[in-house]
Length: 395
Image (cartoon, rainbow, N blue to C red; front, top):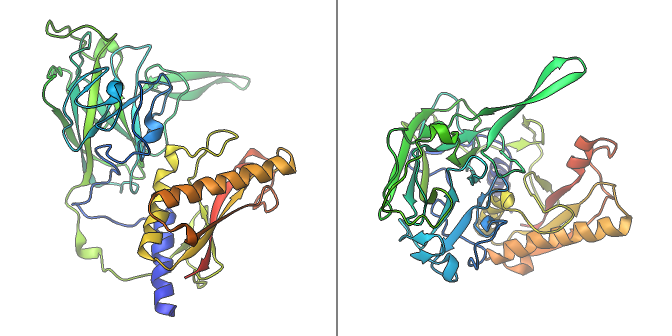
């Protein structure tokens, strides 16, 4: 391969796989899988643990079990009729659903954006909701919250911001406050339509670095405009909404600064750096955002974006061959770590194969804890050692 192609490849790989800020135009939706069409398997039942693990690019940030509906699903999870209501998809053949009214039980949807938002720039967030006729009431204040960090909570309650208050040098208190979504349906605009889709949309200015979108009701019930409607069936214990057609667009993008010149950009895990060393056969890149279930090799949906980027590169360069390497920290026996690292590397290869990558281009290997890149004496170091990498075998 010529040096010019190596340079181009360097730019594509590391501009995609790292935090390098590549710009997108106004016309590109920053939401992957915006209508929930891409899925790993068809939904089979309404599960108390949720089914978002089978929807590409989406996950639930709390223990509240968001639901997935698809034309290919079984009776409980099909469309237009399913266990929780009747509704045609707004786009395609699928949508999701969440409970939004009860303070002690809320459900949310979350996704990672294609890239972080730029400070001071305006964006328009839009998504559509439809009230299930099986609901026992409705609300108004469904919204979309953009955050820099991934939100998570082990409870099924309303999702709140928690921070530590220092009362004295030895006494601390956890304080919870309500989130304020950048886009929220107005309090007075109660959502009542069970036959059509209601548009929720708004423009906001980004602080910069927002990378995650969470959809749901962030308001307490007393401020959600909870309303009874005689036409509802009152089968479900609360307000249940279907969600579809999510989009996030940059407004007034200035293309004058985009020269289209290819640069050779490299980055480590802490900051962007420029180096003269090209990416070539034998080079290794850490996949920074690969997540598995605890002590298992089951890939979590939070890994979708990193894996999609790697898939796109392999599709664009059909001669590239790689090895996926799995690594663990030093806790656990040598034999256990070896098995876990190998099974996790195999899981990544199986995912890539499921996306159309020829298995002959992919190898996997588990290294256990034999190749640490940081100390194993701190949690931060152990977290860095627990990683998945790919090594270029051929180009």
